[in-house]
Image (cartoon, rainbow, N blue to C red; front, side, top):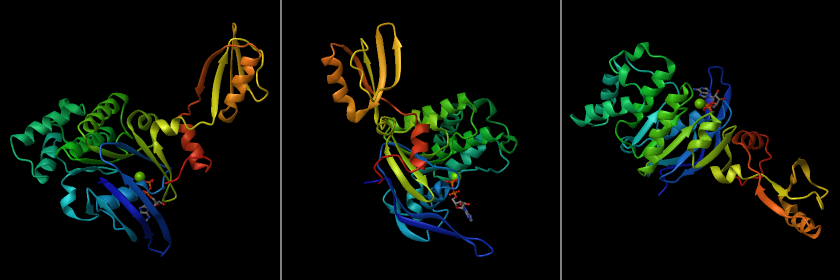
Length: 304
Ligand SMILES: Nc1ncnc2c1ncn2[C@@H]1O[C@H](COP(=O)(O)OP(=O)(O)O)[C@@H](O)[C@H]1O
Ligand SMILES: [Mg+2]
């Protein structure tokens, strides 16, 4: 059973002056259990709208969807979901009391409530700030309270809208550990982010969204290997194919790049010329290159 499913969801916002804006258009996406899934796309692509529809904060104009098997908007599923909104805001209370209040609202009771709060404050690196008023917290500190709050009831599904956008590197590492640990315990995570290096380190699968639609998707490994080029290293320079580019010579080795479709012919040509093959590898792309290719509409990836 999918943990989260959007089926042909469209969302239209209307402004005061009746100007219309479609934040989502026929948006479909399916999330399987036990994965960390990244949601990538430029500002205004519709990520926050989709997330807010899933947790019941915004109603879709058309289409439907399920959260842990329940129709969007059904309250019973929310208890098993941890949610971090895009801009978390809290009452003026200390961090520990804030977490305990969220836990209590989710049905946690003492002594479990205090134990979970302490454990999570330490996990996000806020144990020394636990008794300070969150009203005085920096944006990054608030975001860490928000992540801790999302974890308080040990949810089966975490939905996090840009969890690491304001974080320093150490805090980012704390959050990464929390999320990987949750995944290893069979939990599912759905997060939006602009931090491509973070997504690359964390996510098993990535959905790219542009102008309110999913435009590409794939496992992270698959997407990074999606280059159509291959790099070959040989022991001499005889028989280099005409299409070789990026040729680099070092001592008695030569490395060059050719299209994958010509790999076989190139290897045969090198052997025929008496050369020795040292290494053949598919070139990988950075997630930034994949992102730009997808957004320019020339990813060559399957669209879901
Ligand atoms: N409450 C709202 N009223 C009007 N337009 C909105 C509202 N919320 C979002 N939008 C518009 O919907 C589009 C998608 O926004 P959003 O879902 O926040 O994108 P993202 O999170 O990917 O940056 C944007 O064009 C945004 O201006
Ligand atoms: Mg957003």
